[in-house]
Every structure is written in structure tokens, then in C-alpha cells.
Image (cartoon, rainbow, N blue to C red; front, side, top):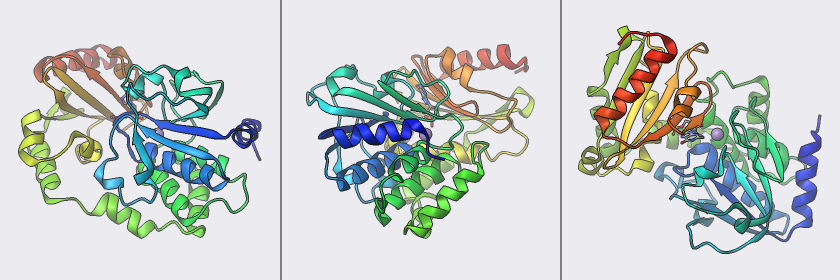
Length: 327
Ligand code: 5GP
Ligand code: MN
């Protein structure tokens, strides 16, 4: 069944000439895949499109056609499109820059699947039951006949496979699988996508993952696994912060834990904290929110301005208070 809001978005797109698309800082597979799928799709219906990102595309997603069209969004950006579409972005502050929403587009469309989305758009297509924003972009693009090319199918499949944890997280539904099946029928190359994203890592990246794992510790009687990556480690191994997005999945494998935490030093005195829960009862979004971040119930993140040791202490204190676990 077609949703009314999806039709409304189609009508708006058809009436516009210039359209900008934007996703969040430190983009993940859902951000990149959804951004280029929507961009390539809208381009195919004859619109002028700009694809914008506050950060570079992580190396691992550069095999996708369309990533070369992504331009850097910064404070100097001064092109006001007819419509600006925000993708996978719960809060405009996640652009990481002091950018005025209305300077980007006369009309704002917000497409996202985060439960804490701030509904800042003129149209807000927010569905927290979707595994990924990619699912929602699929729904929009499917309204035009034969619009989804193999390149677009690759981008959407990437968005879905990464944000659903390879079809494993709680948010994966029968609908997720139906969409993925349709994308395969439209030419998505699952073998290449899985290989590039999950099976091949540059040697230096593997060494850094090894270092992170060897530093890992258990806390709260084995309920929590945590580790950290310092600026020096990133530098020593020649790995960019943007290329360490998926590392937490390795910590999360530890048997018996309920929560995996990775602390990454992004600048001196600025720590990026990523949280993953392994069970529905252990909700992490509220913890991230306490520190000005957010996300999903089982996957969330925040940035704490402190050194590694203090950031860890602050976070552990909040875990103790929220879950009543003893360190
Ligand atoms: P990650 O740990 O991979 O950076 O983020 C996990 C999830 O939390 C993602 O869905 C991401 O969008 C969300 N998230 C991460 N950091 C922030 C943040 O600072 N603010 C908000 N609102 N969400 C975040
Ligand atoms: Mn997402």
C-alpha cells in the first residue's frame, strides 16, 4: 500500500528544478547508500541535483557508482536549492557545521528512521520501524516506473545491508527482505557488496582492529565490553577515523555481554563514544542522549569533551545509574 506522504514527496520533487541532498557527518553505509540512490534517481527524472556531505566518503564505500558526485558541505556553501532533502539525519546538528537549514533549500524534506528525529522539515517522512533510511528511499523511488537501475539497486542494498547488520538486527523485518529481494532482481550485486564491505580490509585496518581487540576489557561483571582507540593509534596505523565505523561489530561479538562500547579519540580532549546493545532490554539511546548524542535503542552514539579516562568514567557512572549494574 502506498503511503500518502510518499506520494506527496514525489509531487514535490516533480515540481522542483534544483534539489540538494544531504546526509550526516561521519557517514555510514546507510547515509552514503541512501544519498547516492536518491541522487541518481532524481537525476534520472531530469532534475538538477547536488549531493552534499560534511565529511568525506569512507574508503570502503567508494566502489559504489555515484560517490564521486558527492561534494563537501561547509559553512561557505551558499546555494539555495528549491528543495533540500535531509537523509538519515535525526537532527540538523548532525551536519556538524553551523549551517542554517533554510539557506540550503526553500523547502525541507526530512527522510529518516531514527526514533528521536526532531521533525525539522516541511515534510517529515520518519519511520522508526524501518531497518534503514535505504528502505524509505526505496519506497520513494519505486513510485516511478523502471527508475531503479543496477547502480541505484547497489546503493540501496548497501544502505540496507549495513544498517540492518546484514539482516540481523531487531529492526530487520519481512519487508526488509522483500525490498532486498526486489533490489537483487533489479541488479544489485550482493557478492561484490558483501565482499567490499565485510570480507576485505586493508592490512593496516586489520592491525588497528587487532590493537582495539587486544586492549578490550570486560566491566560490570562481564555485562560490558569496552575498548578505545587513541589519536596515536590512528596515526601509527595510518587509518582515518572515518574508516573505523564498523569496528564495534567485532567487540560486540563477545559472548555473554549486553553492551559493547568503543571510545575513539577524534581530537585531543574530544571522545567519540559508540554504544551497541545486544539485548532489547538494554536500551542505549538514553545514555547517548544524556551526553548530547542520540540514535536508536540498540545503537547510539555521542561525543564527550574530556580525555579518554574521564569520558570512560562519566559513561560508566551513567551506566551504573541507569541499569543499576555494579562496576
Ligand atoms: P555510531 O555509534 O555508529 O556513530 O552511531 C550509532 C547510531 O547512533 C547511528 O544511528 C547514529 O545515527 C546515531 N548517532 C550517533 N551519534 C549521534 C549523535 O551525536 N547524535 C544523534 N542524534 N545520533 C547519533
Ligand atoms: Mn540509518
